[in-house]
Amino acid sequence: MKFEKKSLKFLEKYLNTSSPTGYEHKGQEVWMDYIRPYVDKIEVDHYGTCYGIINPDAQFKVVIEAHADEISWYVNYITDEGLIYVIRNGGSDQTIAPSKVVHIHGENGIVKGVFGWPAIHTRTNQNEPVPKIENIFIDCGATTKKEVEEMGIYVGCMITYPDEFFEMNDRYFVCRALDNRIGGFMIAEVARLLKENKKTIPFGLYITNSVQEEVGLYGADMIADTIKPNIAIVTDVTHDTTTPMIEKKKEGDQKCGDGPVVFFAPSVHHVIRELIIDTAKTKKIPFQRAAASRATGTDTDAFAHSNGGVPSALISLPLRYMHTTVEMVSKEDVGNVIKLIYETILKIKPEMKLKYH
Image (cartoon, rainbow, N blue to C red; front, top):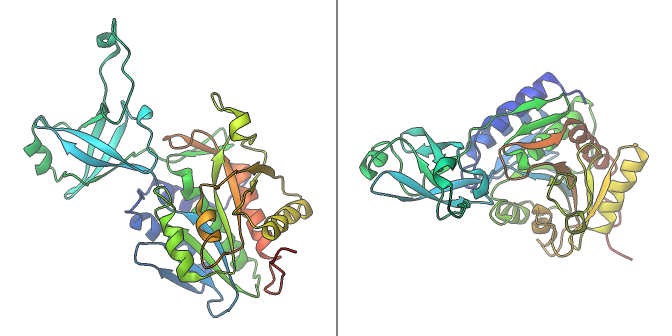
């Protein structure tokens, strides 16, 4: 899949910009700068969810949505010896932490630190320690608590990983926080294609990049009540279950490179889902199917259950190694998600029947 140079430049800058839950503003600025030429209006709510609007005066409203935040850590406790203990901000995985470099976002700017771990030589003849929230710690080179605080580091400071974007084997995009800034990239590309292809749509389109998904879908919950859409199409990531140690009987059968994943779930509206599937078949876009029993665990649920019920659907992107610093997605799949959302948008009509019969 070939992407425009300006699109890849945006993707790299966007992914490399830290956007932890509750502190998404720097990433949102990058995202808004990119979509500005492709929309008629941009709005930002009180907590930082951004949305660009095409046809802002239209009564019928369609949302395409992703979430902007990435998992991270909070400084929770500083020892007298200058070591830092943490708590999660989102679904951060303690097992990948040991030996990772981190950026501590202090009051005086970013301070580098490392998640320390005892050497293998010192762990012989004892029960192998397992990384836990209680025993992982950050060393920022200080020897006292006072020294840490003089660096501008206090309880509540945000901690992120600095791992940056790259392409692998001309097949994958790799980076931390592809979950789900790759979604923000994809919906931004839909806006670009609509503008550059001079397409007109008979409704208001709200390209929405929500905050705080990783801690409870809160940004989507708030913005759904603000926009009050008639339809919502959400994109997020899902697991590539062909990777080792994932049980397909539990997690389903999805694979990077086999196309977007269309979800079946109680919160997924039948009419919107079938419109998406019909679009994929008509336009010969490869797609996969997945099921979620109670909730999708994505912003789809927040939109679907808002405002008395908003017809919503979920198009997911298969991803390897979720919530690590080496998340991987297929470039081909990224292109096909963009195409599927774009082509589905062109099929939506305000007069379409949305009630079940």
